[in-house]
Image 1: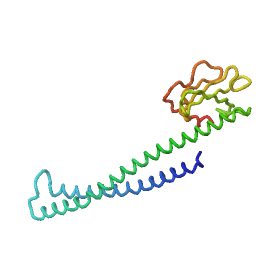
Image 2: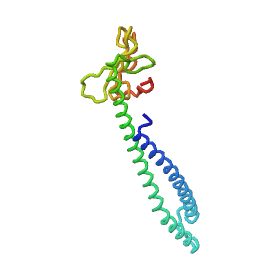
Image 3: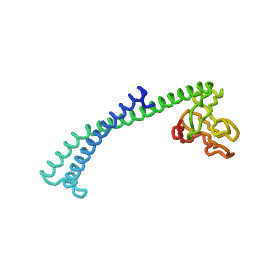
Image 4: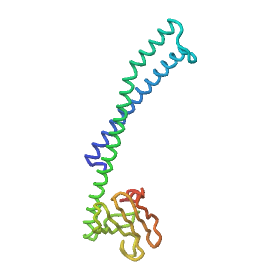
Length: 195
């Protein structure tokens, strides 16, 4: 799946954004150092809660205020740019997951079509599987059997259901009556088991 041109494009953009994000955070950190330096100068002029009392203190106060007024818009612009990067990264993550899900479902369909040739549809934890697709209306839903006596769907077979083509939502191991997973929100990935 990593050779897909669309996934490669998304990965390149994510890498570019990550690099831009690192550079941006370095600039934001520099701004924070400058703000702290100016705050320290401000605190010296306003020791306690008193107003500046000498012309020199007022001059210092005005200079600090001008510098803060000069720095603040650029600092706020950096934070806005940071928010835009985070939003784009989130959009790319959704785009990547969508594309990966689509490619996985296409691969699952190809596997299902090859099952009529007598070859196994794939392997789950190293064991041949037989994929079964039902008319459930879900585009990416499929299930398969494995580990049965004489064939993947023979006596004592295991059973796996995926509602999205990526995660295992139901899993019962061969020669067992209790499921290992029976959870619509499962994060157990099919890819962790060789699919």
